[in-house]
Amino acid sequence: MDIFGGGGKSNKQFNILSGDSTDGHGGYGAGTFNLDNMTPVIIDPVDERVFIDMGALHARSEIEKRIKMLKDINEVPNARRYWIVWVTTEHNEGGEPYYHGAGACAVWVDREIRRGYKSMPEHVNNMDKAMKGHIIVEHMDDESRKYLGEYLKAFNEELWDRAAPEFREALT
Image (tube, rainbow, N blue to C red; front, side):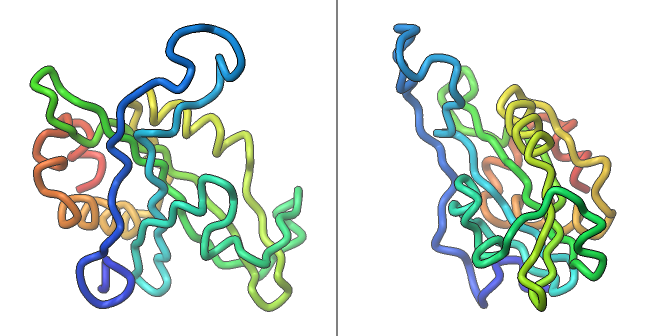
C-alpha cells in the first residue's frame, strides 16, 4: 500500500495554525467555522491510497473535480466509495500539537458518467464534531480505518503519540 499516494513521504502538511479570525468580536464572520486546524485526508480503499487534499475544504478535491454531485445516491449506482476524513489538531497545555478529532464522510463517484454523491449535512456536522474532538470513524470499513491510522502515524508520529488513547484506538 502506498499510503502517501505517490511514492514517498508527502510534502503536504497538516494545518496547525492558531488564531481566531473573528478575534472574539462577534461581528462579521462570527459563528463561522475556523478551519485553521483542520486537514482533509482522502482515502481511496480500492487503490489503497491515502493523501491530503486541501481542495476538499471547498469541494475541489482530486476526487471531486469535474464531478457533478447529485442529491440522490440512487442516481449513481456504479459509484466507487472514497472517504474524506476531516482531521483536526489542537495544542496541549505545553503548546505541543496533537491529533484531536476526526470525522469521516463517504463520497461516491462514478468517473465514467462524471456524477457523484455526498451528504453535505453529514460533512458539515462531522467537520464540526471533529473540531470539538469527536472521533467519528465507526461507520468506515476496517481497511479504510486501518489505512487512516497508518497514514496519520507515519505522517507525524509525535502528533500520533500525543493524541488521546481513544483517537489511536479508533484507528488501529
